[in-house]
Amino acid sequence: MVELETAVVGQPRRLPWLAATVAAKIPETPEATTVLFDVPGWPGHRPGQHVDVRLTAEDGYQAQRSYSIASPPEASQLALTVQRLGDGEVSPYLTDEVRPGDLIELRGPIGGYFTWTVADGGPLLLVAGGSGVAPLMAMVRHRAAAGGGPPATLLYSSRSWDEIIFRDELAGLVVADDGLAVVHTLTRSQPPGWTGYGRRVDAAMLGEVFGPPTAGAVAYACGPTPLVERAATDLLALGYAPDRIRTERFGPSGG
Amino acid sequence: MERSGNETDRRLDGNAAGGLLAEAFCVEMTTAVVVCAGCGAEAVVAELLRYGHEMGAILRCAGCDTAVVRIARTGDRLWLDLRGAVNLRVSAAP
Amino acid sequence: MGGFVSRGFRSRRRPDAETAERLPPGQYLTRDFPVLSAGPTPRTSLSTWDFSVVGALPEPRRWTWDEFQALPTETVTKDIHCVTKWSKFDTVWEGVSLDTLLAGVETDATHLVAFCDGGYTTNLPLAEVTGGRAWVAFTFDGAPLAPEHGGPARLLVPHLYFWKSAKWVRGLELVERDRPGFWETLGYHNHADPWREQRYQGD
Ligand SMILES: Cc1cc2nc3c(=O)[nH]c(=O)nc-3n(C[C@H](O)[C@H](O)[C@H](O)COP(=O)(O)OP(=O)(O)OC[C@H]3O[C@@H](n4cnc5c(N)ncnc54)[C@H](O)[C@@H]3O)c2cc1C
Ligand SMILES: [Zn+2]
Image (cartoon, rainbow over the protein chains, first blue to last red):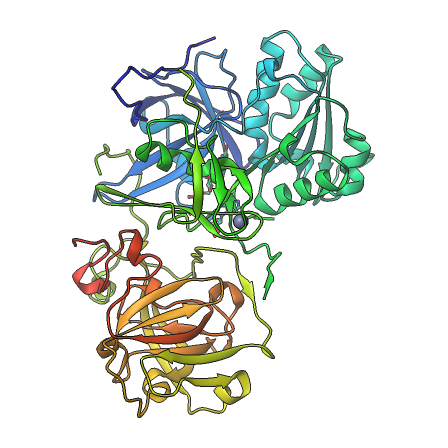
């Protein structure tokens, strides 16, 4: 694993803007794309952390947004998985406009609280909505790279079967690993013969998927703000301790 | 006056202000612990609720809505207001 | 602010010549109505809502919602400009002019501080809010003002950056010495004239 940059005495640790080169783009779903970056000077990160991305137009106009890191610390390239919002300013640029070789400014890693490594123990309970799966995928991938670790369960809410980000990779990881479970819920449309959940995440679903709190259990919820707040409230009601529930709100929900 | 449970509230976690906080502080601030001046509750900065996105980060107590940390960047200056915090502690471990 | 140009990234909606003339420097035109809030959206029931003028005046003034509605109202069409760089043209509001609310007040005050549900404040020179330049608005586009846009009532001071148009406003405190408000104490310009691009202190 890469060492985090440490502060030199008397010299403040800075969070500089870095020039990241787009190395590749991976279409994940019709609306989500993973952008892989080479980032010279990247100090390493922990699963769950994010970066700030800054874009500058010819006339000096700037826009800045946060994106979670989807790649594990073990990967050589930094992955951001971006959901395209039709009327958005930054996300369509990242999903549609950028191409390999482009330079993008980013800074990070950011956030020391919404993080998890195998050393933190478990069971690990993950609740994702849409692109909120990104930082949780970094945890799942890190756990796999570390050769296992505590049992992990991901409850993942998507609008439809085709909009499940990392669907095949998750299925592959589950087959290879008894300690990992992935449960999908499809909120808008379900394929013929679907027997899984077909509604928004609620208390009953969280109770069925995760069961009552067990010693060491730690929960991470990430995605649209309404989903994250619903999940956090319901987990509290199920008896999970407040300091064992960590949240990452992405903002308003498109649906 | 009751708190709105409306989805139009576009709050984020204090964690999302980590980049801005790192411009002002040399230590990791999202894991700092603050005591709210409004209600005395203790919270990790990452768990405060972030409002005000485009103009700055207004980090509010989840219990009583007090603006515990306010931080904004105006051009080349950073502004920080901690009146809503009784104190703030960070790890000084080497 | 530094930073290199990101290939193919364009400023939002470049204005045509006619639009450009109506846009203060650095602004772009939007057709949406973006929401910017410094806190959660308060819900105040109209039965407990009131509006007051307090501070440096002989008798404080106070109106209940019904009394406020009975005051003479004006319908105005204005361009609005947010410091986060969006502008919106021809927004239609109905409200009570501050001229009406402050009519006949004898005061030594030079400024006012608008106060709001949720604790937000903003300061304005009295001279800037009289003479048909500021309102307490309770409808937008012909409909009751939505909570996320400041309903039941917000201040409307369209000739200044929009943070001066305080949402969820509940009253005005007349003060003899200027007292910077919520954003004005966090680096934003005390006066906030978009045509002079007074975004930040020192601009
Ligand atoms: C810590 C953090 C990590 C994040 N990580 C990711 C990530 O890994 N992948 C990812 O795709 N996004 C992520 N986001 C969200 C991201 O920062 C942007 O908000 C999102 O990409 C929209 O930006 P935009 O410029 O395209 O849209 P904007 O131009 O900002 O908004 C366009 C329209 O979409 C609405 N909108 C804004 N944000 C959202 C949202 N999150 N969902 C639905 N509608 C919205 C707006 O209200 C507006 O109407 C993260 C956010 C945070 C705070
Ligand atoms: Zn509090």
